[in-house]
Length: 189
Image 1 (tube, rainbow, N blue to C red):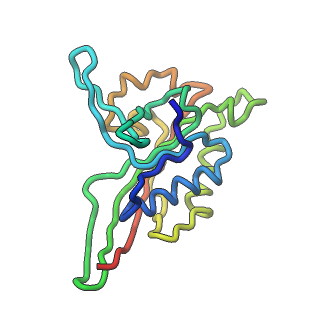
Image 2: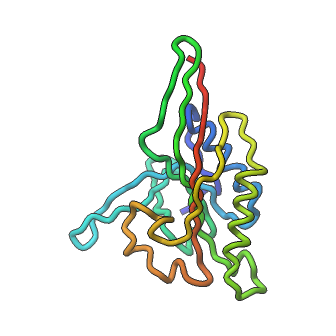
């Protein structure tokens, strides 16, 4: 399957206008990022007669891909849009929307640092934090400060079936990080 490096919705509006800019900036500023996915959905399927929850990203034409750790996808990011979103509005003028988002990254450290066997997660954390706080200028909306950074599987993939996130996918040379922050947009009425 041919997966675009930054798959985007066809009709970009509302929060998507800011999300696609985040995707583009992450892909542009983090040279090691193979895929910068947009908003994920919490999808469910049955495995061994039990519900299995996973983050799925729509990549077009009704096709979703599972974005749990996967070597086949390379180094990637995706966005979790928390529910509910806060809305305040002034009738006849504008509506303000605030949404807490999680930006999840999964990567292979051997691809980032080929000549090192060290677990340089803090270096990667700093790179991502620099992009999110110093290099991510949005023309639609704004990204608030990073509230939390998570690196344990139960926090990075919170709400999903962790049995699928085997320890091998978060052990050297693999790692995952999640950056939580608020996304703000203002829409005219």
